[in-house]
Image 1 (cartoon, helix red, strand yellow):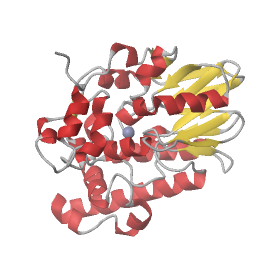
Image 2: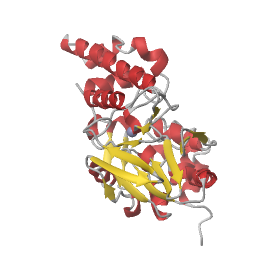
Image 3: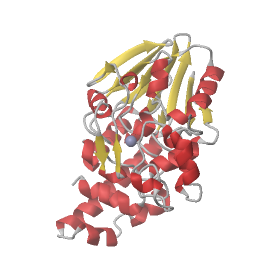
Image 4: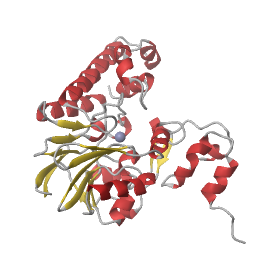
Length: 330
Ligand SMILES: [Zn+2]
């Protein structure tokens, strides 16, 4: 006899009284839910049930925000990390792929920008909220561009301690095929697109994308305006490397530059400077306490982020988590 429901739907019914059920249907993506999720009414503490992933899945149920920038460049938010789109006669050039539950909404948004297909997608780094759309975008004809370490992470199983979640290898079609180790320029839609890695930053495989004529710099998760940034210490990122990327971005930009963060509203060079100054100040506070011989718990109690929490402490990384992320990199 044929089962009445597919597995995720049946489990959703079992979970109907638990808060995790609200988020569960979307987990038919590329992830496997641990046992604990189906035997408890309390959402487990992990990336897809209580962490950033849960937040991005919930956000993806709403409409996308589509904001034209300069020339033929648009920023789309609401599908994981921000997506920057260059659109023109050669087709579309994307920075980041969003998450797969947004596929139909993204297709509609792209269609409005013009009939030409997506030709290239740069993954600014390997994290799910920037790469989960790779599979459908590749299937529709796009070439996926990334740093070699991003391909490595997408090809292996990684337990991310900060997320309490194992990210499984993505399907072959979702893996980047055009690799950029240090720098590569594209002439596309009549403009120069500069893709570059500056060494370790938020991870060990970040790329930034600079649209030269429009003067738009898309920084992936090496720049956040939404709140304190995640730093993937386990995969090659650290606070000093994050500061280095911010410094280099400040050096490249002018007051005219449009600066696109991985998460949060589109910003300016002034926002980038505020971000860098916050990173430097928190790093200094944490390092000073560490040099005094204080334990991580004591450092957290001393609130080294206090001066910045009102501005930065309200997104997916709270003050305690950010303190831990900075400490881990020292
Ligand atoms: Zn990230």
